[in-house]
Length: 246
Ligand SMILES: Nc1ncnc2c1ncn2[C@@H]1O[C@H](COP(=O)(O)OP(=O)(O)O)[C@@H](O)[C@H]1O
Ligand SMILES: [Mg+2]
Image 1: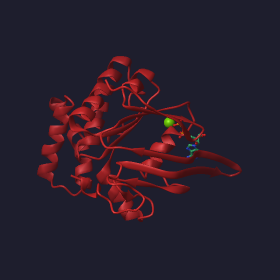
Image 2 (image 1 turned 60 degrees about the vertical axis):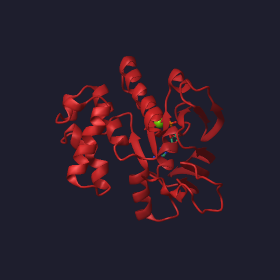
Image 3 (image 1 turned 60 degrees about the horizontal axis):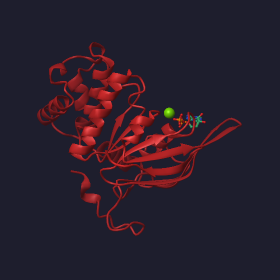
Image 4 (image 1 turned 30 degrees about the vertical axis):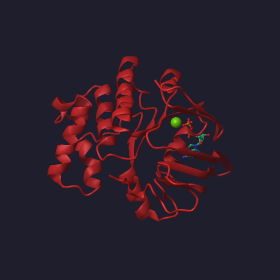
């Protein structure tokens, strides 16, 4: 488990650290004479077990937010804390380790490695975490079983449907029991029936395993089934909405 840092000693927080906390985050892209303020003094705190949707018009900074919150991209200013640990001021090696341990990712394009089988793709985060071959294989198969793909373990991504591929990426995202799963329009490339199956799987993981999730979506129906909706506009969260739980 990676929750040993929950009772952080940092002065800036209270009794229990949030899973994720962004403090005064700025992200400015400067290319030539062009300057885009993609994130503008953004603050947000995500609590353990929350299922959070991010909505907003194209170009408002949703992808940038996910990339910055997960340490994939550098910040211009501000800091992000994951379970109480600073992501950016701790140096590259710590950042890489924090990323590997605490985050799982689900992208719109499935980002599976084509030459690896489903189970080999799912094993990746475990091997990055230094877990041995036998245990990695066992846990990866367990994860594939949980997403309903037990019988597809040895198939390569090309041999799977879009929905199946996205379920492989979901298995890969939670196999190492991350504190937080980040999804950037995870159903954006799927038909509505498959989208619904993939979302049901994410909701189930949130409920049964308590995995905290932050998911960008254009689908108001999906968003309304989350505990919380962050509405973005022009690099800011303009509304932080708590919804009724299902
Ligand atoms: N690598 C980049 N270089 C320059 N500008 C970028 C880059 N990535 C995103 N942007 C700009 O930042 C803003 C936010 O983009 P993005 O986060 O992709 O929005 P969204 O995901 O909400 O559609 C947009 O104006 C976009 O053009
Ligand atoms: Mg985007």
